[in-house]
Length: 245
Image (cartoon, rainbow, N blue to C red):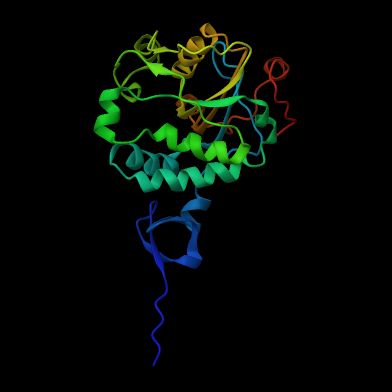
């Protein structure tokens, strides 16, 4: 008598154990099942959104809606590092068709403070950056340094966020003439990414773009369609051009 054991995974969304055939993405003992993956609000391929300040655009794979949010928060704050790899694999799939991003010299992940890095044991943004790097064949370079340990952005209002990250980053490398893609976990107000961009430009960077796992749309817009690509006014200044979504 031969006993066959079918492999199963624990879904990071619904927390059910599912067969391998029902896993949309699996990493070690975890997965996101097909049902939960279908409930993620995904951004249309090659879409770009208006960023902030000197960042020319931001691209994102997902909207920061309920299913994504629940998985991401457990990853970030409850030490569920495997969830980050599941998101990362999805990012690699999304950005692999975004060949236009291959023009960048390198990817610069937004850094954690030394205190948070010690507490968490990993930088959630760095994991995402590694998967995006695989997708667009652009290397990761840890050139941005966090020079002060500010409060967590997620606890603050939009105005407080801007003040909180002001002059929080630096770059001591020579980046003269380089094109750099900043990677962060979530794009909310754009203040963190813009402050990182300022540090890179002071080091000589010529062009700054942004890529994130998830894009937050404002609560007052919940009753209108999800945001689409940036307006023509902003598109013509970027290295990426995309017609429609």
